[in-house]
Image (cartoon, rainbow, N blue to C red; front, side, top):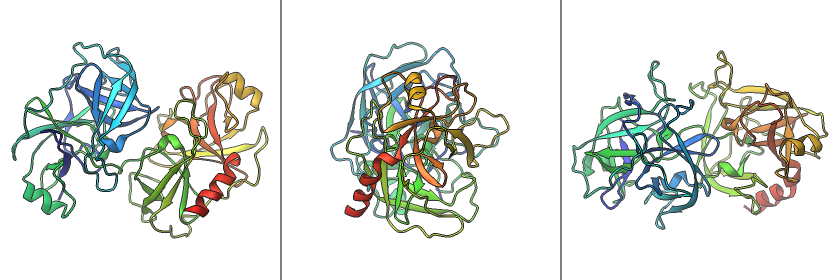
Length: 416
């Protein structure tokens, strides 16, 4: 059985379930001109343009700084129709609850107005709540289960609004008056968390926002004890699921452990604009079972020297046509000198960062691996943080310097 859950917005509602557009089709290009992609170096949530200055999304997609991408169809191509606009403000609903996902709505004020044209138009807000049985269109770039579907291109699916009775029976005790369900109880068609924050449009009005949160891979991390995982602070979400023992993230291999977070704590000095102190700790709600598939990595005994070879791992996109990024990818790269790092990014490197990679380009970790490990001689020395592009000449990857945070890690684990 599969259905969607949505939040209600004055007569608008928001959807939630798991992480793909299932049973849908490629939207006619630019037929959903209000569709937005929220980007933090990678697409992580959807949204809806509601005026030239404002975008609506799900509160669980909150980041203090985001780039809103409008006029997109294929999110990996430059099609000439796009507008990339940074946020001026990101405002969550005051009643939003990250555990119950109640009031799962936020507004993003753009730093400049969107240019309205054939590719970019706002969607109408609802004049009232939609009736049970109303057919609605859900859109997004979530993964699909169709071998022919291209989820780089905007996907559409048509689903009916379900009755409150069916919704409550599907999720006993979980549905509030700010939510509704849509979909087919027999399964087969759905939108899932890969489309979180995206629109549910019924009769030309925005009635829902895809609401269920985790369920898609958005960042990497490193297990450092049975209860704690290290990642990048820019990957922060107040509630998430940690998946351990993975190799192919698209397949159930029998080795996996899925554990929800109890606490997510980012470094108090983290700066979202400069990405200084880009580290966070995730406390698991129960201990990981340590076995041949799941083991912690050692924290550093000191900082690694220039030239040290390190391994970066993750499921980020690759530029190889043969590589399968559903399977864990590895890359060996050297730590660069402070001089080379500062020359690559003048005025941008702090003492909590280091560079690694090849100045000539060709090898790099990319944003899809944000938060993932950089392991040197068996110790966690780095956290994938940022960079310009991917594998570009004179723009190596920039990593959080774990050796600078040893005391904060120890104190945070002890106090929590």
